Length: 301
Image: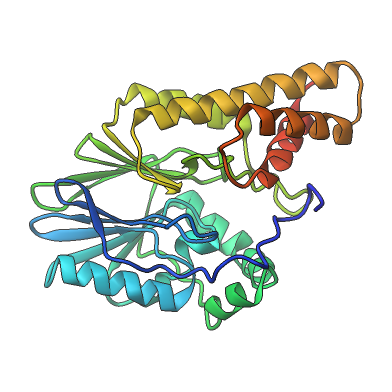
C-alpha cells in the first residue's frame, strides 16, 4: 500500500452502527464502534430539556439508526447534532437529522465540508462495496448554526461545551466536554489503534502533528474523568497520555532521521518497523506510515 493512499478496507465488515447506547456517565451514552473499521463511537448526551448527538455514522441509514436511539432515550426533547470532524464515517449521516435537530458545527467544519466533502465522498465510495452501499444517496448537509472558538449548550441540568481545536487530525477538529467530566475527542484519540493521520498529498495535507501534540497536552490539563475516542473502547485520561507519547516519538524520530539525510521512504520504513515493535498490541499499523510521512515532510532538514 502506498503511504499516499488510504488504507485498504476492502475486506472489512460493513460499516454499520448497531447496538444499544451504553451509559458512560450520568446522562451520557455511547453507541460503541465494536472495533469495526469506519464505524465511530457515537455519543448521545441527555439533559432535562434537550439531547445532543455527537457523530452520526456513515450515510443516511446509519444516521437514521442513531436518530432513533436518541429519540428513544429522550422522547419529545429538543435535539442538537454536532460532529467531531467532517470525515464521512463521523458526519455523513447528518441528512437523517435535517428537520429533526439543530445542527451545530464550528466554522472550519462547515468550510471543510464544502471544500473537501465531495472529494472524500468519492474517495470513500471507492474503498469497498460496503462503504459505497452505505454512502448511497448521501447529501452533504450544512449546519443550522456555526460558531467560532467555543459554544456552550445548556441541555437542562447538563451542559456540553463545543470547542474548535484544529488543526490537528483535520484542519477543523472539535472536542465536546460534558459537565467538565466527559471528553469526546473524535479521531484525535483511538484506543489501542495507531492514530489516524489523513495525510494524502497533494489532496489533503491539513493534518498538523505538532498542533495535535500541543492540543493533547492541553486536553490533559482539563483532567477529564471519562474519555471517548473516535474509535476503540471508552477510556480515561491515560489515553490522552498514550496518544501524545506515540505522536511525540514519531515526530522526534522523523526529525532525527531527516537530519541524517536519508530519503522520506527510508525514514518512513524505519519508523514503521520500530513502531510496530514498540506498540505491538495496537491495531491498524498501516497508519504509521502516514503519520511518519507527515512529520518527515514538515521537519526541517
